[in-house]
Length: 378
Image (cartoon, rainbow, N blue to C red):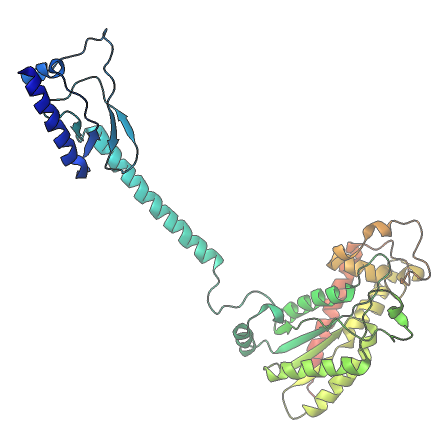
């Protein structure tokens, strides 16, 4: 009789496990073989405690269908109630309920925190639509940003003119280009109504065949004088077309000074009945050369140090603006650059501190000259 009852209980337990498979609130267990001995106490409604000194029965491995993963549980040694062998309802104990509430709170709180952080970051790194960047460089603006700035009163275009040429063994070929760009930025910011066009990097440097002037040194690039002048004229006309009233030529190279004046005079004759004007600001070049050398001479530096090219004044300016262009190790040489080095003068005592004096001088004098020229609109 006990054997028949045991078989019935086993069938009921298997059926219960199958029925409970779709219920997420139950933990399913693999059915185990029931015996008369194991169910006998259950038939009479008694609960048998396992003697602590006896070996524990084989643990029952269960998997949670609620989480859909292979999470295994080990049931204790207490035997299940009759008819429920293998199926254990998840009773909402106070501890487990509180844990679930806390876990859900933390999850929702973290999501809110991350959403807030992402919103703050988006506000910090995303510029306001239509708001131009803090730059005076034309090449860093979009066309709507440029149009907005011109309409707001930035109607002066500075056209910086550099040159690609040798500058002695201690200074890079792009000295003029880097220097005139950085100085033009400072001048434009001081003026307050100016923007800076891309640097014109190719200027007349000498003949090609046979090579003359700086063309005798590798790396120097030259263009014919008429090509250079047509380039200036076309750039100035482009600026006028887009709303700039004043086009300012700033030449960092001696060979460009005459061409700048010729082009400015030609354009001003043509623009005489319009608000537009072109300005060849010679004071920029005078301040960077004769003006700065006079300042250094007043401080005790000798004529043989000052020179005319890639010497003390030239090198000091570059150290103040972009020291990466100067090979400072060569400045510590015991001997000054000799004939054939490309340098005219002695740059060894050049320093960034001296160069900053020249930078201030150039900016101040050039700003004053531009204001005077744009005020006088004859």
